[in-house]
Amino acid sequence: MLFRQMNYFVTVIEKNSFTEAAEELFVSQSAISQQIQALEEELGVELLHRQHRKFSVTPAGDYFYREAKRVLADVNQVVFETQRIGEDDETQLNLGYLRVYSGQELHQAIAEFSETYPEVSINIVNGTHEELYQELRQNTVDVVLSDQRRAFSDEYINYELIQPEVYIEISARNSMSKKNEIDIEELNTISCILIASKEQQAFEADFYRNTLGFNGSFLFAESLEEARMMVIGNRGILPVEVAGTLSSPAVSIKRLPLVKNGKAIIRNYCAFWKKERINYYMEEFASLLHKLFASEK
Image 1 (tube, rainbow, N blue to C red):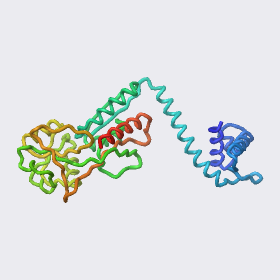
Image 2: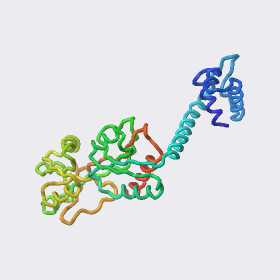
Image 3: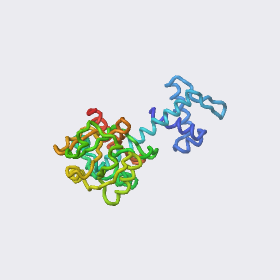
Image 4: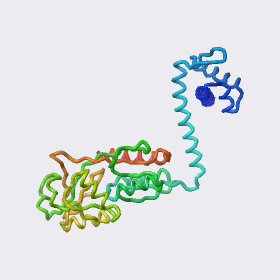
């Protein structure tokens, strides 16, 4: 009964009229009036100060209105999501992740999620930051694990997961591999290997040059495995972000912290999804990812 009373009260306030609220809700004006009076009696406070045919909202009524509106919105979302899940013969969760990411947390999250929600079919794609952003915009993926490269948008849920330090992988044959850390200014004469498709090479090079500060030339690989083979061949260095657990490189590769003016370079990894398309499974998967990344700190 309380939810109905809350709905009656919110509608009366928004319509500023018992008569219009009754028409909106397809009930009699007396029924609404009786239910709001019963609500006030149950709460033990006056919500509306009545004066003949007019009324004003008390401070308690104003607070109750705002909170009741929020609660009703949450309840409606729960009802909608429950009905949607019940009506779907096959529920899908479409995930995207950065092609350069090679940690174990994503694999663990998918395994644990699938065990808990076997009714959900998971589809997975990978790509560069820009490719994943376009997938989100076009609604071809639901959630992406990606790095932050632009200001957070109010159109998306920007769920921060971890802030990893940037490292480089360099051939053990390179004399710089003997260092404990490498300043980005020391890499001006060494090629930087990036993982990107031909269509995305310019975007990736622009970000690493103008945002992170790599001023040398760039080479490109289609996959992490190909990029590491290039590192082994001493063709350049590969920037990597140690996000969570990351397997050790091959014996012929050294992984060193990358710094700028003596300070570690930090990135920001997030789970992103559109606010307008949010559902229970997206939140559950993102929460699971967050827990797994947190356990590795």
